[in-house]
Length: 120
Image (cartoon, rainbow, N blue to C red; front, top):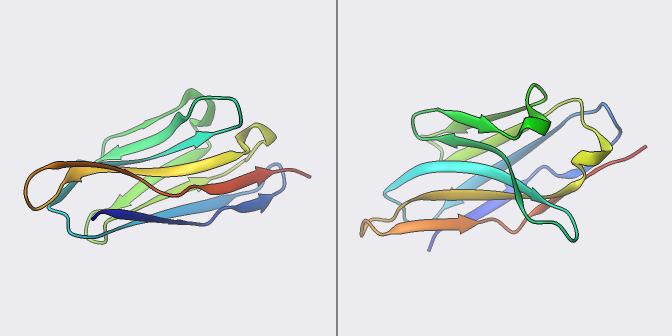
């Protein structure tokens, strides 16, 4: 069973930085992409940033230039470096991983979520 473990959320002042990390555990054949999404009460979960096996990245317009996503294929981890944080970045952040398990079936797994609060 594929599981994701997230870490790094917390409370930070506007303009500050946080780093979120996510590690994949379990029996996997290949990870095709990993990403970070966020959700606030009453709103749909939205993409923050995503990185593919080949290293291609995409970001939400609202975080471009402030957030950076990076992956370590050898360790099956993904990191989201968040700089210049704004109050509107406050949300629960979820890690997602997509890929193949050894039977070559697809998996699409979510972490449990980590709270990020930007407030003075």
